[in-house]
Length: 279
Ligand SMILES: O=C(O)CCC(=O)C(=O)O
Image 1 (cartoon, rainbow, N blue to C red):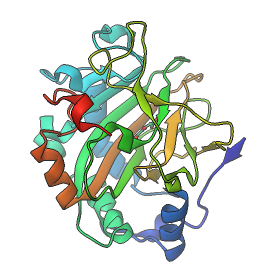
Image 2 (image 1 turned 120 degrees about the vertical axis):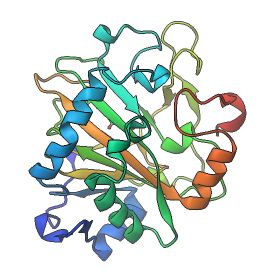
Image 3 (image 1 turned 90 degrees about the vertical axis):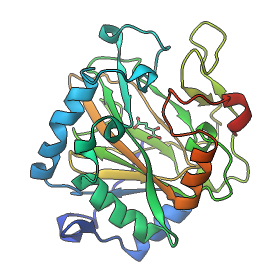
């Protein structure tokens, strides 16, 4: 089993509300499609986010429709049965989260990884309940979920609000798969009703025998970043601990404009013809 780390990163990289990345980090992100940065936020900063995370994951935010769902089960699954809890676009629902400390530090890194203008496209709270073997996030490439745009550049940050370990289903990636010429074929996961975007939001790809999976365990306060083409996903939670992750994706400002012009906001409530606009 291969495990990745980044021993060179740490609290010394934080300068005010920014985090310095090195030329090696930038190269790694470009060539391998992912990056780990440790000690991204302090515990004090994380504590400003924790209550909001719990609020959403406990289903206390009203009127979210399909933006509050389980990514491992069909829409309509009763909340008590959720295992991979997903709350989309938290700062759309609660303005208290706009411009939060995570956004500020992540934005500083997105601007170092990208030569154009990177803006935040969407965020999501993801939680794996303890002892939920089936809390799997199916392997995919993010671009497979999104409409075609001219510029696909993306940096998706996953902030660990809890330790994220192999036992509680940390992120797994196939390094270098971001360099494949063709996007792999994605299809809706089949929960027993044939598989459609109305049944659940989740897409799945065929993995290949040649795929060499690397695990990205991180501590609370660390982040992983992955690009839009890397094959990734995560296994179920076999531990007694939650896995809590705050995902935030940055894309080029023109790309975001093109998405919005198609009616695509990353909300699961978007009224779009998925078959027409998606890759
Ligand atoms: O963190 C995970 O388990 C998967 C999240 C993911 O696939 C994503 O943010 O694109």
